[in-house]
Image 1 (cartoon, one colour):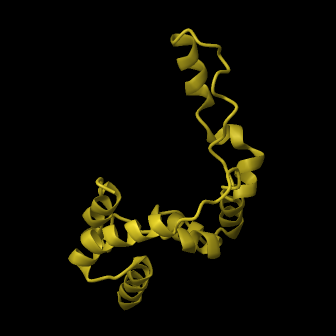
Image 2 (cartoon, rainbow, N blue to C red):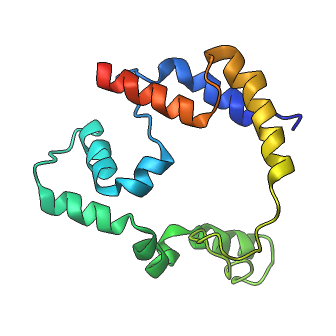
Image 3 (cartoon, one colour):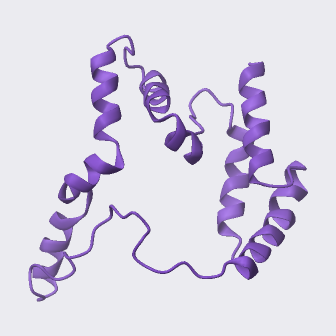
Length: 149
């Protein structure tokens, strides 16, 4: 845990969370309110969100199932094939893996010790700068700020 890069990165953006040219999204919202987040992204990019067919299509095409079904479109196979040739490797080397994964490939280890380290690093970097005790507090604070604006 000597490299606090994630937390430093997070803290570098936190002061800009309400800037007009930044759309701050939360992973959990993308999972629980996928269509609303797609609409939010479209609005942020200046698209007409009254076209519900287009919002529905973008929502469907950004689901895990769609990306898994079309995973070759969501990886770097074109780059890998060219790079493999340049490096005198078989053209298909490294193409058996996918960027679209469900996380179920490995057994889940006991993460208590890791969680303690993460919590400690959060406290050192994030809490010390924001007063927010954890990720959920940060989400809640951001949500309240958005409702206030």
